[in-house]
Image 1 (cartoon, rainbow, N blue to C red):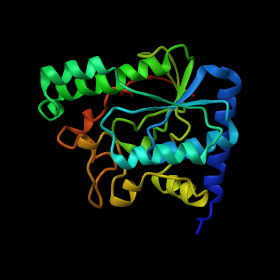
Image 2 (image 1 turned 180 degrees about the vertical axis):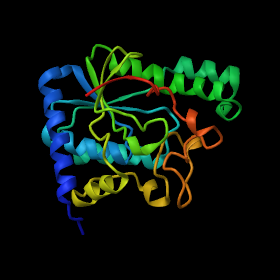
Image 3 (image 1 turned 120 degrees about the horizontal axis):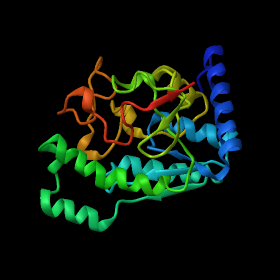
Image 4 (image 1 turned 90 degrees about the vertical axis):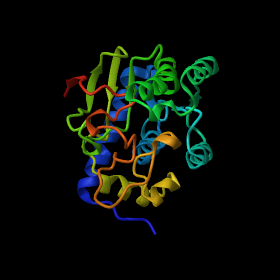
Length: 239
């Protein structure tokens, strides 16, 4: 049974639809959406398909994603037939070199090695996905963690040299799920098993009631440092 959309959420939906349409009109083929296949990103996938279908969508398959995430990737392809979806993988030589030098699960040993693994499996493929574009779209929200509480709808991404758009910046967790249920959007079944934030399988765990939604990611590290490098903590912000 679908959930009712509140007037406040409807206003936010219309705001996001406007932002996406504006991005498509302003950047044309030079704007892409980085889809992690998390709850926020399936919402954006649905909204892009309805309001800005010209925007390209890409997924970073690190080679260590949970089976449930790969299953959802297939469902998204089937559900959104007209979606311009591309999957990027890490370079095999990079992965082989990192594992040969550091071991298959080196990310548990230190933050430096964890970020090194993220660099090989995420950052370098992201650079390829963003090459030649003028803007990229993410599902980041201020409510997600202490590293994201000042996110703007639009900000200059100095590290990648392009504009970064965060249309869901002011959405709450409750609103994300209200949209998913009301629109019957396909989502990762791990969410139903208390995984609010889902990344690579060995770096993601279920959380307990009351824990921060990002506490299941790299749980062995300090909360202020739990980012992979895709989203630097101090971008330049624009209204």
